[in-house]
Amino acid sequence: MLKELWNIKDDQALQAMCRGWIENELQTKSPIHEANWSASLAVGSLAYVDAVKETLGLKVRKRSIVEMNDEFAIREESSDYGVDFGSKNSHISTKKAVF
Image 1 (tube, rainbow, N blue to C red):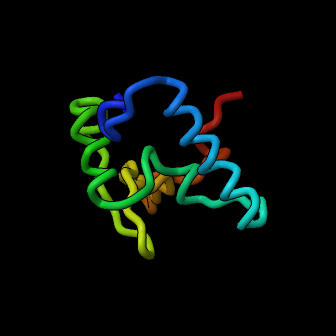
Image 2 (tube, rainbow, N blue to C red; image 1 turned 30 degrees about the vertical axis):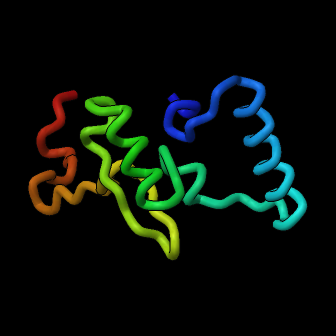
């Protein structure tokens, strides 16, 4: 899939290209955790992210493309896990207890 997307003929050329990117990143940046990369399915230019989303089709239908600084990413919608039941839950009291 990536070979077709980037018009690369063989696996060795793809491996060399990826190895070059990794070596360049390791030499130019400090090894820190970047949430954009670990929390996203794909990160890069809008054209790249669109191509990845189109290629994956239904597998990423619930994910959206978001812009972060000068990059774009395919991210899953964030969910609010903090449920507030408010007064729907009553306190447990000894009045209702059966001993």
